[in-house]
Length: 69
Image (cartoon, rainbow, N blue to C red; front, top):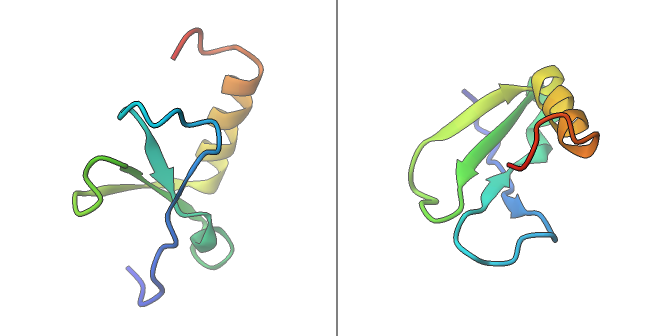
């Protein structure tokens, strides 16, 4: 997809319980995607989520629209 490498990070809200995801926000401006991966499997696949879909998801979580995830 690109020669630019994702810079992965976990939320500061992660409790290190093993059920975390990591995102790489550095590709938003140049590619319009937010890569998401399982923090337990950093060599595994990543999903490239369109920035609009990711923003809608985050807003839904903040508003409590998605229940207890």
